[in-house]
Length: 132
Image (cartoon, rainbow, N blue to C red; front, side, top):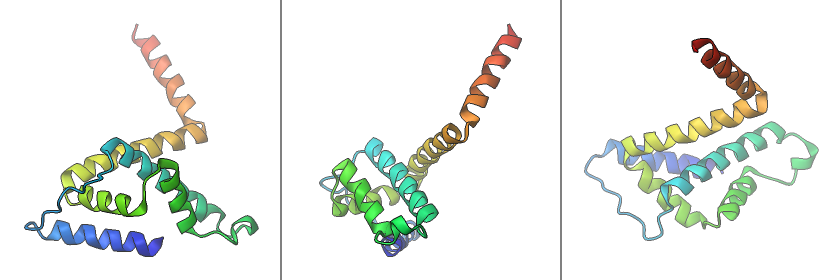
């Protein structure tokens, strides 16, 4: 899994560094919304694996299993995901916008599980009441 991500990142940097290269749009491009959802799921899977990798339950698992479970969940073959990832990454400004959405969703998930989301909602309610 780390090797795959390393190769993908190298490919991305190669495209960014070379303005003349244009990656053709893949035939089976993953839609942007689904790609964002997949990236969120991949980051969640990596975090889960990282947290529990030394657990006895995980001794027969690898990060690749988590990666492929995300692909199975979204019913996207790995080759289609990889080509889509490289295509989106070849347009850095758009890819950055996509990744902001990914990070926003991950932040929301973190807030929800840490209990901070309820605190923020309560704070916003109190602020709106005090403005009236």
